[in-house]
Image (cartoon, rainbow, N blue to C red):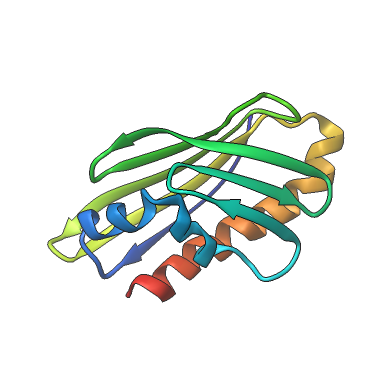
Length: 132
């Protein structure tokens, strides 16, 4: 597995962050304007990564207010797990960790690593911008 991860502190409670992130419709607000196309519902999403692959995703686990786990519906083209982990630091301050675990062969790793690294950083920073 190849892991792309980032962590940030956000001035919101864990429950507020969980409420926002548990609805995949809100993830549209966390997506960059270019390089990706997507569609979202409450618990499912479809994401196309720079015309290389389309991933069908579904919320697979929720532990209020600390974890939202989203997994690919199929292992084709690759199995992917997206984890949003939320930990309370203080009453209205939380630490948020976003990780994308993907089982990439060497060729796919060369093609998508930079894009996935940028996506993780973009999404976690956009979450802070939107939610604070």
